[in-house]
Structure formats: structure tokens, C-alpha cells
Length: 82
Image (tube, rainbow, N blue to C red; front, side, top):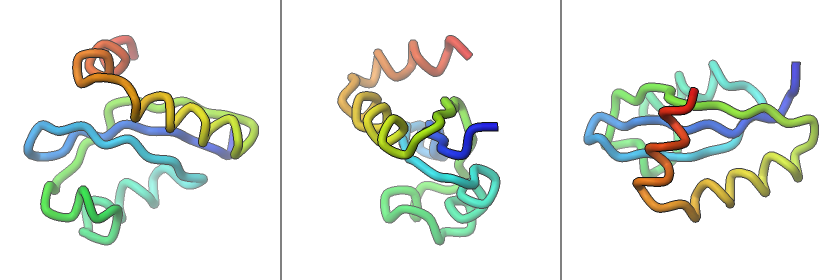
């Protein structure tokens, strides 16, 4: 399995958060515990909506940046494809 994961979470307020990790389960737990990104701290619980796996960190980080540049509507379409 690929070690580098880009993920999209849906926060309790309906917003979408995109991040990168090498341990998806741990990272989602951290977000829900309030120990994740500053953005998600006041928006728990979060729910995993989408993932993409990569063989290299650089590829994953590039894709994370691409997703973060998408509009809300484009992100919703991406998430609905899974």
C-alpha cells in the first residue's frame, strides 16, 4: 500500500478540509481529538470523505496543493466520485 495519502475531510460545519499524511487513521483521530490542524479544531467531528494514495511525498504534496486550489463545487464533485 502507498505510504503517502492526500485526504479530504468534511467538518461538522459542512466545510471541507484537505490534508496530507502517512498514517490516515491516526491523522483522522487527531483531527477529531482537536489535535489536528488549527482549521479543524473548532469544527469537530470530522468525517473522511475522500483519499488518494501516492508512492512519493512530492507527488502527494503536489496533489494536495492542486485540490486546495479547487473551488468548493469542484471539491464536492471530486468527493462524490469516490
